[in-house]
Image (tube, rainbow, N blue to C red; front, side, top):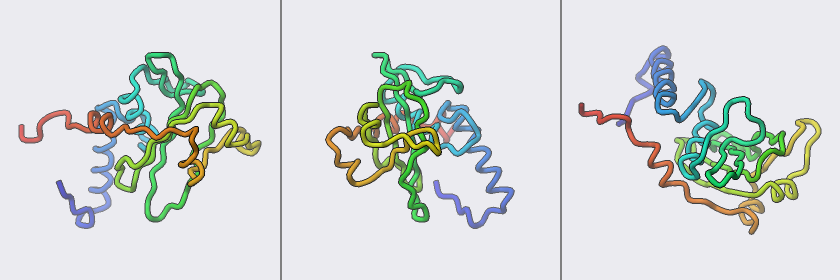
Length: 168
């Protein structure tokens, strides 16, 4: 399905964006109207690990697995114009592990990493100015033996299916 975005007016582009966000909410993949990176990362991790997603007011963890593991989920979308490597700050210690989900510019899943809280705390010092720890995606982190690479492509494929057949 190719859409020539350049041929659309600004109101048409905004309507397309609004409709897309509404559909993602209907599918329970995003829960807010904010940038969908974090919500989509959580939905993928939840589909992969199972368990429950935390409520909005829950501090520290985003997913509680069936085994009781409390997982903080961080998402990042890399584009040609963004050189960012820092994730948002982790401000609470009420988690057992962190899963980082990295997307490309078109929301393709490029990397999924998992590390324990002790690993996070040993690699990333507390920064007073943000009152938290900031994970930085570096070559050293990606090759660290304490950091596991996970394949969540099957979970992403499961949640990526249409809600209904478009031919109906």
